[in-house]
Amino acid sequence: MPIGKPLLEGLLVASAFLVLAHMPGLDGWIVAGVAMAAAFLVPAAALPLCVVASVVQDAPALGPVPALATVVGCGTAHAVRGGWRAIADAPRAMRTCLAACVVAVLVGSLVSLAGVLGLGFEQSESRSPLMVALGDLAMPLLGAAIGAAAARDSRASGRLAGAALAGMAIIAIRVAFQVHWGPLAGFSEAGREAIGAAAQLSGEAADGSIRYVGSALTPNAMSMSIAFAALLAWPMLRRGGFVVGAVVGGAVVAAAVLAGSKSSLIVALAVLAAFLFTLAPRRTLALVAVAALGAFAWAAWTGGAVVGDFASRLRLDAVVSASSVRAKAWDACARELHASDAVLGMGLSHWPVFFERTIGERMADPHTAVYSYPWTYGIAGPVALAVAAWALARVAFRGGAMRAPAIVLLATLLLRDLVAIPLLVGTTVLTLQLWACIALVLARDER
Image 1 (cartoon, rainbow, N blue to C red):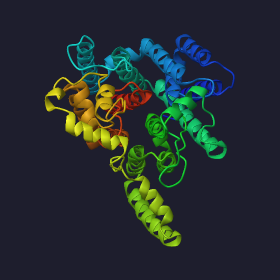
Image 2: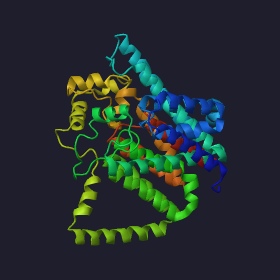
Image 3: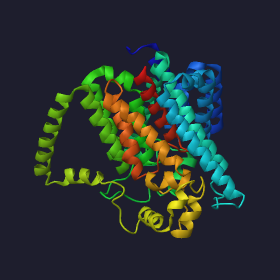
Image 4: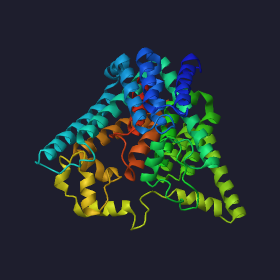
């Protein structure tokens, strides 16, 4: 499909929202209200508004809570105007993946309800099981409605690509501002407080550089959003050939490196490799050879400092000191969790209670799919992960236009989620973005 009116529509709608969200002095709920009203009054605006709001949660005139309301409100507007129908008409593989995730959430919700009634594991009051359940259901469903609609309708696909490109552009602009005017430049007051509370800017990264945060509160979310945006724009981008794939893939890698986000760098490298190899296998191998020679020459010239710095960022988050919070959490899981509790799970809100008891910290998740899925959702959690991985693997090995995005999504599920908070089922907007990508890949591939 040539770049035309739908892409420009998505780009303009998303850009207008981004300008509004960055105007100083505006109340976040006013911005959210305007966006949601536009989504319900103008059906074509709902999809790009939902996607771009999921990328920018922390703009000066928005803030995380109004941004989340915008995502859910605009996503719902898109769903009721055709998104649900797109899910119903989607191929069986996509609907099976979505159903598996819904079942996992329902199982976790029932276990949480039993815990609230005093019949099971204690549930944290600070993390309402009801709100977690609603988020765990809303994000996959709304994301799937977006991706499925884009797969069946070329106009929706163009608008989605336009919104994704606007999202990538605003993150690049904001990171550039943060480099020159400080890491907190461009954030709302609530966003600054959230960053401080999460210790995202509590010092310097291991190599002495500040971890720039970008547009989604954390470096991980920023670089993941760029990777997902590249996948959402893939039907348009791949028509630009090898050069466009190299530029987009390189931008994803650069963003992850700049952010100091090791787990997201895994996905970023997969994005680059998949883009290039799908577009031009032989040229990619030649490029890898040239890059290897260049890296060797660069290392010799700089004494290895630059290459060594980059290599240090390739370490997985699993390579952490024994005194780190994540290492303590994983050790507590290995010592304290019982296999029998992974049959039905411990509920949606037990982890804060578990970690406060074992390590003195109120973590919301173990930060690894190995413990998170079985002991949150029971057997239904790993089943949902396995079903999604199987569906994406079919696309990846069968080949075709959707092979590259399928490979990247597999890397996300099977590599990145081993050392970070899993995304297949979750309450954050990253889950919505992931599901938009999954639905787009599975529905477009089989059509």
